[in-house]
Image (cartoon, helix red, strand yellow):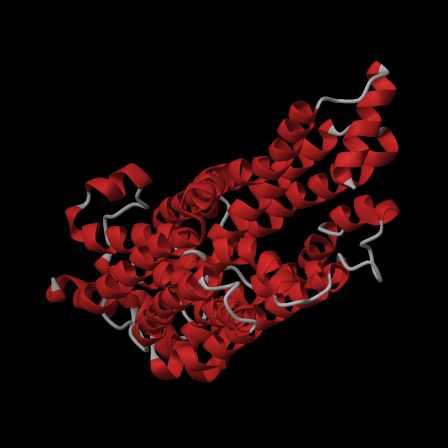
Length: 435
């Protein structure tokens, strides 16, 4: 529908159809400019969270979401496909800042015993957002050609909701006390978040971290790279965030359409099966949220990558023998769902939580900037290179992803300590003593 709009607009302007290469270039620009915006958003998110606060940054960030919704919604009636490109860019900046600052805020306001579950909120609502988008894109809702500008502009809804609800929540107590030195503001925020009974325990934990950081300022990303005391934590989040995009989850979604067709599912029914994949990922994110404070981070993320490694082997085999038996297409479909379940159970949710937990207050915003930048660059790299990998290796491309998943599982098992139920200072000491 968007490509039809581009061609129609081009014809009205220049009285000729746009060339196939020109249309492909404009379409790929609209798609990929989101990742460019995301990279920029992640690059500035940590700095904004120090200057404006966690809550202040999230509220200010809605300007990008509302601007994006307005531009994309007006693109069709105004007859300017350029508005789609700018709107997608602003939407990417909004996403980059949000994915950087939102888990940072949740991790800092959560009590230690619930930090894993609270941190999973990011993953749960991302998967919930994907599922909502898939459902709204069905033809029964906003999936018809005349509705696509409305569908794109619905990104304003969560932004408006946040502007209405978030002002009633307090700023991060850790930010208020450690970064701003606001004792009274910190106590007021802690009381609102945890009640009077838990106030002293939480305040004592924050005070210990503050006393440990006397004389230290918030670090810039380049200063973090130069700090040898956090080199293993930094290597860990770089590897985990790169692996989150390079582990094959995007390839699975790419192959899903082909697998569903091979299984005999009619083309017009495939969007409904795709909704099933979104529901599957959402369900596992919820499951991970319930298990993370019981089983721990290390078990879930190592187990997730191990199961994904097994799925890569099985998926390669089932695709290779796809035409030899009518059973294999169904086995391939089972592998698609198993891979998505394994991703949601560990890597999809735990990665963000570890970025919060492996760093103390002065390093955490910069750590999120680095992690976010690596994640968005890896996302861009996969979008750019993946089609060529598929053409060159076909189904054997999953052997590449097998190497990524198994390597990361091994690294986590050998290097990363368990962080469940520990304060940020205890985690830092565990990391340094273990290495």
